[in-house]
Length: 124
Image (cartoon, rainbow, N blue to C red; front, side, top):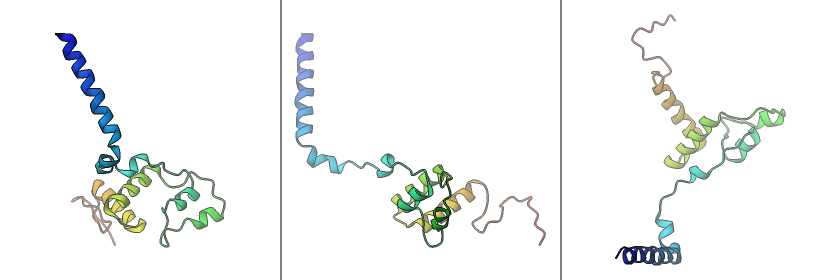
């Protein structure tokens, strides 16, 4: 009796797998797969410019023209900014602003740049 159940399960998996494989062009586009999972981040300023992580307000051309051999922008920040750009469909400047405001909020800093600490004293 156990052999019949094992045979039935094996046969069902083979038939189901074959059916899924043959119809993959219909159901595969319906699966939401985020693009940023497979995106490799650049490791230089030139790579940052090629992937769109620059703008007129945040120009990396001077770094490239000077032959700057540093590793480019912070990789964690690049990943977060790319994620914001893809999810919210915004350009680089707007994504950078959103990222900065999120970092401020995590560090208890207001959107205007002043600390939210009630003990904070400022002399102007």
